[in-house]
Image 1 (cartoon, rainbow, N blue to C red):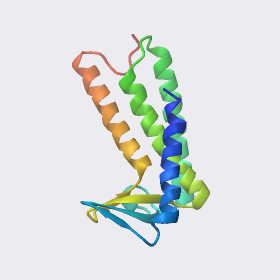
Image 2: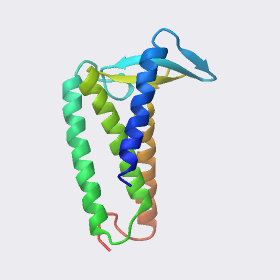
Image 3: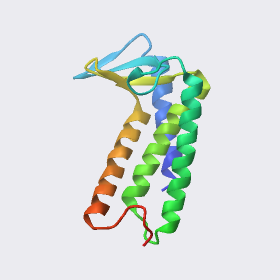
Length: 152
C-alpha cells in the first residue's frame, strides 16, 4: 500500500497551497468548522512553538523508524495485514506532509478550525486515523491471543 503515501501527501499539500492563496484573508465558516489559514510553528495543538528545525529533525527520525518498522513487520509476517499497513501508511503520509511544510516554509499550514479548540490540517487527520486504525489492529490481534510483534 506504499502507493497511498504520495497520493495522501499530494492531497495534503494541495489543500495547504489552496489555503495559502484563498483563506489567508477570507476564512469560511461551515457549521462548527471554519476553514482558515494558520502558520503553526509548534507541534500538535500549537505546543512548543518556534522550534521548527528541531521538530522537523525529530519527525524525520520517527518517520524513518516507522517506515523501516513497517517494512520489517510486513516481511516477517507471511500474511499481509491490511489494517496494520493502512494505519502505518496514513501516519507516515501525514507526518511527511507536515515535514515538507517545515522544510519548505519553517512552519506547518493548518486550515481546519473546530470551534476555536484547535486548528489542524489533512495530514493531521491522516495521522489521527492511522493511529486509530493501528489501535484497532493491536486490539484485534490481542483478542485473538497473538502478540502483534510475533511472526506467524
